[in-house]
Image 1 (cartoon, helix red, strand yellow):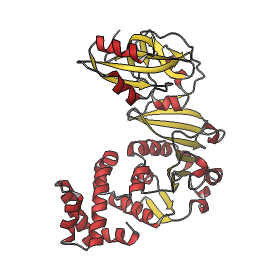
Image 2 (spheres, helix red, strand yellow):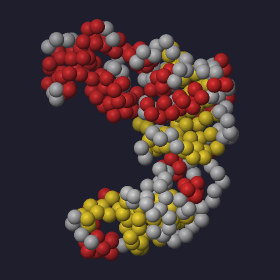
Image 3 (spheres, helix red, strand yellow):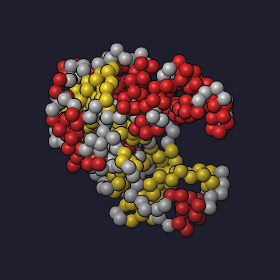
Image 4 (cartoon, one colour):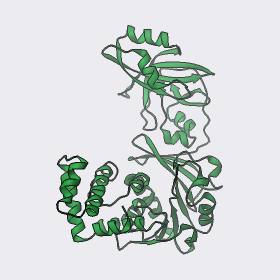
Length: 395
C-alpha cells in the first residue's frame, strides 16, 4: 500500500470501502471472494487497500484489543509496534519522572504504538519517522483515538533530530533489514552509534531494544529493563537520566519489578521443588534474586533452574514438584513413561541440546496421565527431571 492509496482510505469513500471490507471478512469470505465483492462497488486499487487494512486490523486485535478496530497498520509496523501494556508501563515511568518535564521526542515512531501510550499518559509528544506512509498512519492513529492534541507527527530523519529541548528522548530504532529481523545493534536503523549520539544530547532517554541485546552495548550508568508479559519476554528498554543504573526485570500485567541486590545463589542437588525463573529475570541476570525469594539454590551454576525444599508462592517462577531425577536416556525415559501410562508431556529445557519435537515423537506416548519433563544439564551431564505442576502453594 502506497501513500496515495492510504490517503484515499481516509476519505469518506475510503472509509466506506474499509467498513465494507471489515464486514465481508467478518462474515467469513475468503480473500478472493472478498476482493470480487468489493470490486463490484469500488475501484480495484481502493478495494485492495481496504482489504489489506481490514485484514491487518483483524491480526492487530490480539495485540491492540478494541483499539485495533479504528487503527491503521502496515505489516511491518504491526509486527514491530509495542504491545499497549508494555507501552503504557513505560509511559507511566516517563510521566512519573515529572522533574524531567513532560514533553517527549519520539524518533522512529513507526505506526505510533508508544506515542499513543505517551499521549494517553498526558505527555505531549513530537514524533518523527523517516517513512512518509508510516508518518501518515501514526498521525491517523492519533486522530482515531482522540489524541491529536498531544501528538504531533512529522516526516524526518532521526539522526538529524535535536533532543536537547525535550524532557526525554524515546527511540525505537528499526530492527529489520533486507534479510529480515536483525539482532545486531550495529545493524539497527539508525545504527547504534547514531542512537547513542542522540542519547548523549538528551537530558533523559528510553531506548526500545531487542531482549537479546548484548550487555556490551548497554551504556555505562544506564538502567537496562527487561519486560515480560504473561510469562513471555517481549522486549527490553535502556533508560538514561532516570536515576541509578543497573538491571531490572518487570512482570506485566502485575507491574512487579526486581532489581539487582547483590545476591549470590548457591548450587546444590535437586530437591522436592523446581522453580523456573521468568525470562525477564533470566535476561536481567537476576536468577540469584529469584532464588533468594524461594530460599533456593541452582541445580547447576550456569543453568537458570532453581531447586528448593520449600514451596513458595511467587510470580517470578512457576513451581513444579519433582518426582524423578535421572540421567537422560531415551530408552529409560520411554520405559518410565510407558509404565506410568503417560500420554501427554510438556517438555521444557535449559542447557540441553535435545531436539524437543524429535524427542516427543521418539517417546511414542500412550496413556491418560500427564507429566512435565525438564531437560537440563547438571555438572556437564544431561538429566531429565519428571515433575508435576504445583497448583497449590499450601504447605
